[in-house]
Length: 274
Ligand SMILES: [Zn+2]
Image (cartoon, rainbow, N blue to C red; front, top):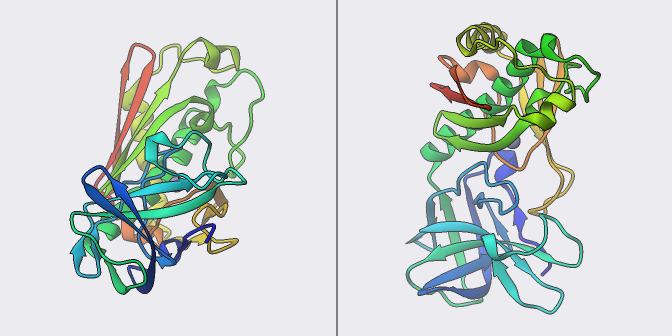
C-alpha cells in the first residue's frame, strides 16, 4: 500500500478499517490502517494538531505522518527527510498506541468529535483572519506582489513563519524583516491595534454573511493536494490546505484577533471561533 486513504477532509470522524502495518514508535506502537478518519500532524507544515480518539477501543496517544522510503524503511514526523507528498515515497497515517493490535485485525476508528470541531473552527478562522489581514495591510505594498485569491497582496504567504491551529483559534507569526522590505512592504508606523480593528470588522462581516466553506479533494490519499474554499460576498477565496474545516462561516460567531508587534515579528492571535 502506497498511501493511507483519508476521510477527514470531508469531515468524517468515524470509520472501520483493517490494520495493515505496525511500526515501533519508541516503547509505543504505530498502527497503520487502509483508510482512516484521523488527521495526523503534518511534518512539513505542522499547523493543525493531531486528532484524538480511539482505534480498536485503544486510546490514540498521538497521530503522526509516516513516510515509507523507496528502500521500504518507515520514518516518522520530524525524521522524514523529504517534503510532504514526495514521489517515490509512501505516505501513511500512523496511530500511536500504548498497547499493540495485530496486523490483519479489523478495527473501529473513532475521532473525538468535539475536539475535532474546535480545531476545524480554529482552522477556518485562521484562513479568514489571514485574508482579512492581507486586506488591512494592502496599502503598505510599494511593489507589485503575488495576490491572494481575493486579489489583494498576499502578506500572509510572503511573511508567515509559523501557523498553529488551536481549539477555536490559531497563532500566526509573521516576519517583517529586510527580505519583506525588499519585496516592497513597509512596516513604518504600523499600529497593531488599528490593524486588528480593521481585521475584526471584516471578520464580523464574513461571519454575518454565513458563507459556505468546503475542502476540494482531488483524491483520497493523505497527500492529495487539497484546497480550502470559501464563497465570500466579495469573491471565491481559495487556499491550499491539508486540514479540516467548518461548513459555514456563521459557525465562527465571536471570532476576533489581537495583534502584537515585537521588533520585526508580528503575531496574530485568533480566538473565540465557534
Ligand atoms: Zn489550512
